[in-house]
Length: 253
Length: 199
Image (cartoon, rainbow over all chains, first blue to last red; front, side):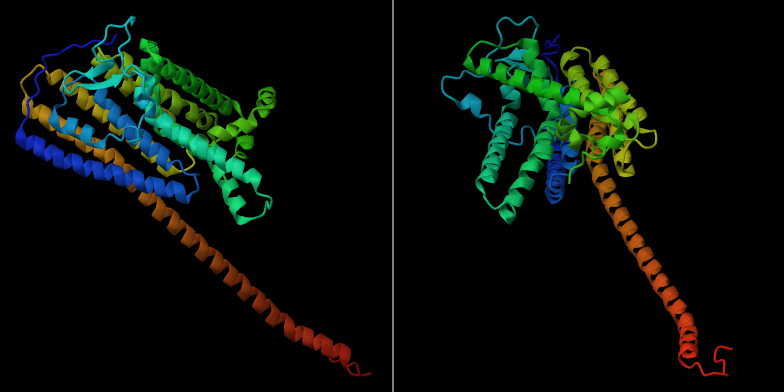
């Protein structure tokens, strides 16, 4: 299913084109970053009741995933993709930094013919765009940021229960933050990197890397995220059968 | 339908989780409600196509174009999106992705030929289209912001004008009523036998 096709693909590199492409790439990067930052501001101003951030990040991810198509789209587009990829928001995958965890090993018993290099599947032979077979390698940063957000949410919940005066300003803010997390933050995080989640899950189930503790933990996370994804999809199906009038009441305030 | 609704009432609190995803779509129409699910499924199918159909570039791009077209068809009817701006951005984005897919197809077919400059032009066009998708979103959002502000101002002005008209009308009624009241009050107060003040 996944195999290298053209390992001797020729890429003509023109110095002038490369220079101009780099300049355009930088400009595009500024546009993308500014858009994401302004969408984040709108999101914060709306106290999480805005879909703009989620939508923008999702489209940016979609734009970037087009680079996986195995064609020689020459330097300008390749540079553009290099500059505008937000990836996992630069969040580190702390799981592969744990000692004795052996990351990114190729699955030995894979039934797929792969164009893989050290457990990575090369999608574009011309520009060597690749993804790992291991779920956490592709999505570990998001899992990490999701975990941190979850811990913050739990801390907020604990803090809420500790306060005696329920009418105080602090507790009202904390309750609002908790509600915002339940209704917005988690979903924004999940949907904005939805393409990454899907690709990481598909690759994980296509190769099922289970050799080593890191790979096993990664598969565990993949199963957890699969359950979450299926749960959300089922909810979305149920919501489409639910009457509009009633559903209108479940609004974010 | 009523039975389904009754069953779904028990899971209604869980809808809070996906309420953000449903915000942009009209809940009155079935097509509006199904859009949340379609968006999730659609992105999943895109990834499935990109990852699993890697060997078949034409098939990959065809699947992408078909999916983009289905989304456009779903978005066209009225009362799907709450805001027209969202509808415009969704359709615009999908058209942008169709253009990119077509450009990729042409680049793929020209790969074996030695038309470097044509391919280079197509590559630059792809960069422009990709950037245009994002800029288009920004422009539509800005336009929507100004439209809403204008509408709000117009409503405020209308309300003000209405209030002013009402106040003026009330004032005129009071002015008209006051002399009559005064005369009638006078009539009641100054009731002198033999003289009729109201006459």
